[in-house]
Length: 94
Image (cartoon, rainbow, N blue to C red; front, side, top):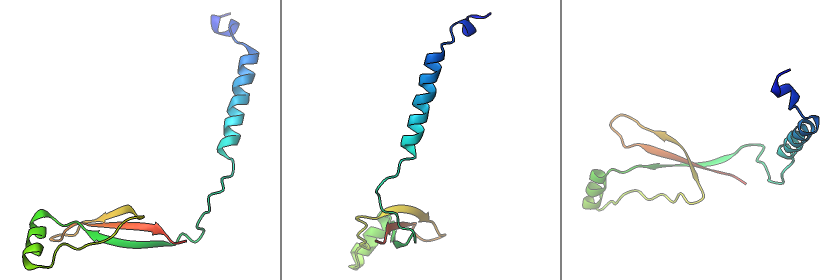
């Protein structure tokens, strides 16, 4: 026989299977985090203003657009020809 077969230990194998089983059970454990079953999101977008556009808007007195994105997460970027890119943000509706 080869060395591998001679060094096989049944107890170590059983402990490994048991540990794998316990880890599998723990991964499937139920958590208490509420889940939004309807998956409703509040969405807003914010245009990325280039430095040149910022200077022009400040010169005209308009100023760059202000959007408060606190609590939101970015999830998409839209890039349209001849326009500034737009970042889309979302936050779950509770």
